[in-house]
Image (cartoon, rainbow, N blue to C red; front, side):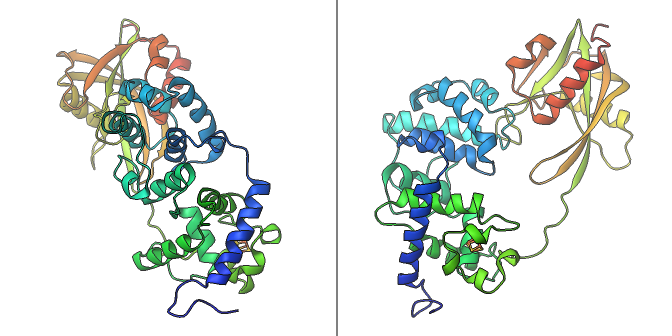
Length: 373
Ligand code: SF4
């Protein structure tokens, strides 16, 4: 079989055969997912944003809750950031929730509630990159726009035996060309979803299930015995940096002090115990006193450690230590946070906290030593 069309482009006949088989397989095997029962661009956009870096199983309950709370883009646009973040709590990558709200407001303000209909226009929306734009345009509007995410890269690298690292710019450009060649002109949304579905369920990162794969006869990596070795990446990923973080459970009359993180940054808009990073050579108590002075403008006495836990973010890991602390001088003012609040444990469920803080709240609840001082 020819390895490619003259000039290095994808072989047309082979691509047509791949499209046919992928579509037929998808139509017979697609999972019944709530966002596949609609052509509403709002709901498709919502699902695509939620599915970025996140598994279908995790997304489903969030999607259901969101669409119940905000059935139309106008409902989302009218919501407050706190309400949206609370519904997003636990889904991670919180900038997605902020972008979601910004984009919904833009669609209502600039489009009168109508989404842009082409990938080229969609890519201008907050939080919408080329992949998401292609997914929305093809699924909701039937545009012949390709998609390329980690799953699709893996499938294409195997189908076309692309041995070059898929995280290099030139390889990525080639993969976009291959992805475009596999979009069916008649059913672009389904053919894009077929590639994604194959990557999620059959052509998995480890142990691809080639025996049941609908395109096994056309797969070059399988023929070469290299399916598991692909896709190649540039270099082994460096170990994630690690930080020691100290935080304070400052109690007063049964309430605890929390700060809301600034909207633009990491975990923006979420509530947390005040605290911060331990500098090199600092003891935990020393670091916490310094952080609380910098963040809240108060002097504190640090007490016993309540809990320590490990948590991983996309680009770093932390060990988070929660200590009891008491304000010995001053009134807390928000020097870093947008707002400070004293919350009763009964109020915790009304606010959005990062996953690590949620775990600390559970420990605090079990500690039962009370915040009354
Ligand atoms: S044959 Fe195997 S490696 Fe090739 S696309 Fe199918 S599952 Fe992936």
